[in-house]
Amino acid sequence: MTSKSTAIASGLQRLETPLPGVVEIRPKVFLDPRGFFMETYHSQKYAELGIYDVFVQDNHSRSVKRTLRGLHYQLRHPQAKLCRVVEGEVLDVAVDIRVGSPSFGKWTSVTLSAVEQNQVYIPAGFAHGFIALTEVVQFLYKCSDYYAPDDERGIRWNDPELNIRWGVSTPIISEKDAGYSKLADVSPECLPKYSPREGA
Image 1: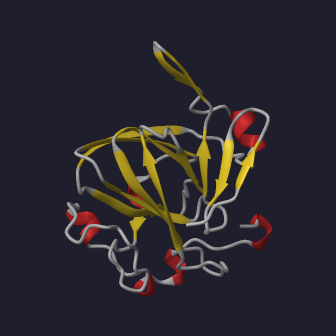
Image 2: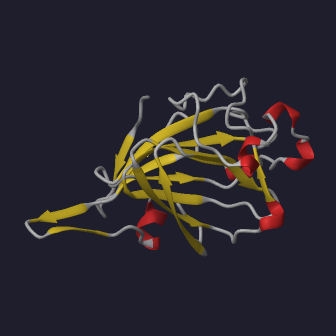
């Protein structure tokens, strides 16, 4: 995967992924013999990166190796997400499911790890999921809207037309996630819409 890096004065790096709008972020980490210090979020500095969302909810999950969570989205309460890992490593996946988008049905992935301290930003309108690559994973993410149980939707993790390369053929997955439909079988009325004025 090729990425374009853009450094800014605050020390943050924005790394473009092949899927427009989805970006990897590398915060500045200060190391010394005691350990490390880093800012995991700073609204003004992230705005300089082009991330203007107001995040209203923080979530934290713990997963064992081979656990796959996703692919999730909300329709009436779409959520942009800022994701990171504080223990272990995951393959984090975003899929553009916005009807009318030039990249509709395309996906990209970023490996997030506690060692690298990197993050991934996923705009609203994308389906999101991840798989745990290490024995234990603690996964944290910020959301731009609140979780709405009656609005939670999803796309099948192993949709053959998406052909996402998870790296695991038999993941540990919830009954709910296993029951989602393929993207092609989801009615356009049940998918987010792409707005050209939003850009990528």
